Amino acid sequence: MNRFWEKVKTKNILVIVLVIFIGIQFYRPEIKQKPITGEIHVPSDVRAILQRSCFDCHSNQTELKWFDQVAPAYWLVADHIKKGKEGLNFSEWDQLAPPAQNAKLWEAFNQINLKAMPLKSYELLHPEAKLSENDIRILKNYVTSLAPKQKPDTAKVSAYNKQLQQINTIHTAAPKPSVPTALNGISYIPDYKNWKPISSTERLDNGTMRIIFGNDIAVKATKEHKTNPWPDGTIFAKVAWEQIIDSDGNVTAGAFKQVEYMIKDSKKFASTKGWGWARFLSPKLEPYGKTADFANECISCHRPMKDNDFVFTSPINH
Amino acid sequence: MKNLIVYLLLCLFTVSCGSKKEYEPVNENASLPASFDFNAMNLKVVTSSINHKKQTMMTLYGNDSAIDELKDHPENNNHKERILALITWSQKEDPYWYGAKIPNHLLSVEIVKSKEPFSENSEILYQKYEGKELRKANADGRDRIRTILSMKPSIMP
Image (cartoon, rainbow over all chains, first blue to last red; front, side):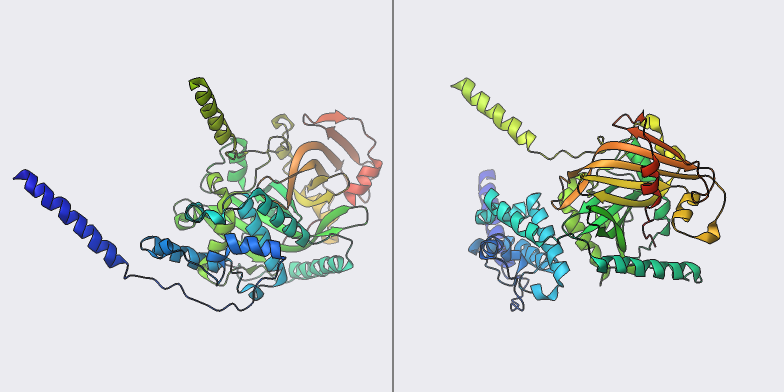
């Protein structure tokens, strides 16, 4: 008697699973087919790599395999493509200004170089997308060729002098009534100037130089080697300036470009990896981001450091 | 044969462990010795610079009165002590961002002090500390004082 019921049960379960499996095939979130409006123009060897390894999720030329079409894999693929195109789309490349295009390519290269891209789950089912050492070298040479050549430039000097004048007028004018606030609610923190620097960087990819400031909690955590994860209350401010170079190869800080913050609060900012993210541009401190979820861009760039609490900087004790 | 398999497995294990990225919780080579107690001087960032020929990067720190004087703010002209400190590091490629360079080894700390405004005082004190341990060095600072005092504060809105 028991055996009989067991048989029935097994059969029923199989039937139920099959019915569900067929059923879920009818739920198909649309992968929008959009036209190629302004494609990226790169040397043919670079293009071949991008097409093979990136285009499925980062262009309007998605080529799905038969197994990508089967739910629930299809749902995952559809989601990857949607998010992928939001961050980087080689078919709508002309929508970005040339400096933004360069920044995207350098970021893409670094994501690949740090093995964060292509996504491991994608690579597993699409082994042809995996980049060889040679592919990586081709991309590296290409992005290197895009780096701005640093040479004495009077335009940079005058941009710096103009900012200096502006700052001095703001300095003497009445204090501003409100603090600039980004769309995610994070405000500019003027006090960063009084914090300690924890490191600095020279960026050859975009011709800037940076100082990363840390508040007292960050400095204490560095002293105690408690940096992974960083404690709640940690704040970093990364300030970027243009490079001004003289004929002897001395580089000094030119025009102020931006200040970026990472504010650690594992509860408040749980939905954005435990950090609050914001960027304020130019001495006018214009908040970056067109929508409240602009922090997705910050996170995707910092994702290769996910095992290091999303922080690139290795801090220096003073 | 068995030994060979064990050996190969061990090799594979070591290789796979070795390829895992190790993060540096602190950039030790670039850090100052705790005994130097740099932060006790309570200085703020003035500016930073890079020397492409020497492949070095520098950060200049100062107290408020020194920063005001470098900014040419005559309204803040006071007669408090001025302190400036310049830290120099060698550079290395950032292991986590191709296209970036970060501090590698600590090379020196130079300190410039004056009881009076730099502009009025001929007695400007210059001290230089070198190497990872920041040993005091005997150095004639005349040129260095001139260079350090000519550095312009960075724009920080």
